[in-house]
Every structure is written in structure tokens, then in C-alpha cells.
Length: 340
Image (cartoon, rainbow, N blue to C red; front, side, top):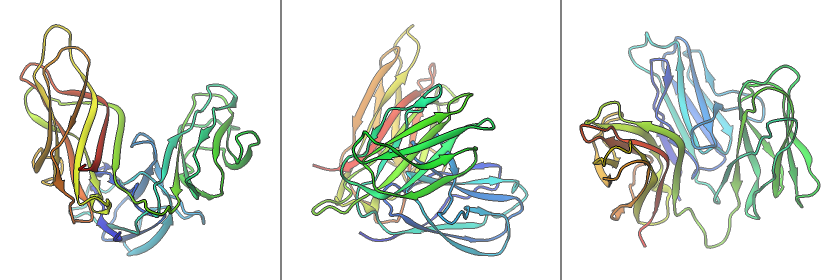
């Protein structure tokens, strides 16, 4: 599989750029910054489908934070599902800087998950990584931790005896890396207040006869068009489809379409490739109509298309209402898989 070299979407206004999907990439990721900056540019990672984000932090404590105009090359060891650039205080820039990412392909299929964090002090349920998880892991905590809080990540070989491998005592500690072998992970909470979200990514191991054959993008949130009739971009991603082994791919969409119970609707959801960011254009890979009422599960699978050769492909999920009801979607999954 080839290495990946891509330019991340870098906004000037306060906010975040389009996420780049990195689950098929290996552990070392080199980030190159070039251009002007007035405020701050932060490269963040997420391991739970884009809900929980935090700044990338290397094992030396170095953060993916750019505040000076001087060009910089930094390498971060991390296993993350996706990355994005967040801009703070750069609205006066006329041209955004260039932030590029380079990484090798993953040697095996990574494991991503969200820990069970108990609502009160105690132990969460163990997470079984299976027998194909590697030693390197990246753990992300997002939430407000009151003073004196302790959230301990525990590892175990046998699921019985657990030992401490990482400790969080405050928020904003970033996407922290650690290297250790174990089969089971769990969280011990010694804190009050609301429970934070703690997600993790674990590198996979090289197994003979295997290679990445699919990429899935899951989103547990809810999104809707702002108008009742115009097609609008609901979510967009940069996806390294060129890293997948199959020469011909298909994309499947599954989710829950929402609407009132007073009558049927005629809305549609589309998966598009390429075009202009934030614009519902490009090649239509899949259209999934919904002519039901109330909350309905939708599912669709596209015709086959050739695997793109570009390092990353702009993928847009759009919705279009029926002039009466907007298109509303939640709990959806996009799956790029082999044409079999």
C-alpha cells in the first residue's frame, strides 16, 4: 500500500475544517506547517466518530499547536480515527496557511472504541480488544474535570487482574499516546461531576493474507437541512479510499430518517464524491429516498465505482427535503467496502 500525503482543510474563521479520515493510516504522522498565522492553529484527533476531539500530543509531550509564522515539521505517533484543523483568532488572514499530513499505511486493522465511564466512583465495564490489537494506543478524554478528579485507564491480559496504564487528573490533556500490550481495557473513576467521554484507538498487528478492505464512518448525532427543499451538505470528510485493497468499491448508507407522523414525506439522502467543499455537487455515488412517515430506518448500497487514486477523496453526505419537510438523519453509518 502507498504512503498518504494530503493537505488538511485549514479555515481562517474561528472553527474547524473538514475532517480527514485516518483510520487506515499507520502510527507515525508527520505534520508540516507553512504560512501566516495570527492566532492559533490546532490539529485535533478523534477516536469516537467525531464527537470527542482534542489536540494531538506526542509521547514527548509536544502538542500539535502552531502559533508562529515559522515553518515547522513535526511528527506525532498516534492512532486516531480522524483529524481536523481548528482555527482560533485568524479571521483577519486573507490566505490560510498550508498544513500537510504524511503517513504510511496501517500494518493491520486498528481498533477504536469508547470506554464505559461509570456515573459515580467505581469501575466501568471492560472492553475486549481481541487478539489482533497492537501495543500502541492513543487515548482521548473530553469533559470538565473538577479539582481532585482521577480517571485511571487500566489494562489486563486476562480480564481479571487490571493494572494502571494512564491517569487523567485534568481536562485538556490532549490525545495522549501510550505503548503497552493488553487484551482488556477499562476505566476506574475517582471523581464527582458529570462523566467525561474517554475514547481510544489501538493499532492493529500485521496478519498474513489480510489488508484494509473497508472504511466505515459512524455518526451518532442528528443532522438536518436548514431549508425544506434545497439539497444541503450534512456532513463531509476527506477519506483515503486509495489505501483500500479492492480495485472496485461500493458505499452503503444506513441510518434513521426522522419526520412527523402527520403524513408521508419524500426526502432523499445522497453520498457525493469530489466537487467543492460545503456545496452539494460532485459525482453522486448513492441516493437513498425516504417516502415514509415518522422515524424510519433507511439503508442503501451503491453501484460499484473504481477505487480513487488520489490520496484523499472529498466525500459529502447531503440531504434534500420535499418542500414541506426537511431531511433529518441521525445514527448513521457510511461504509466503503469491496464490490463483491
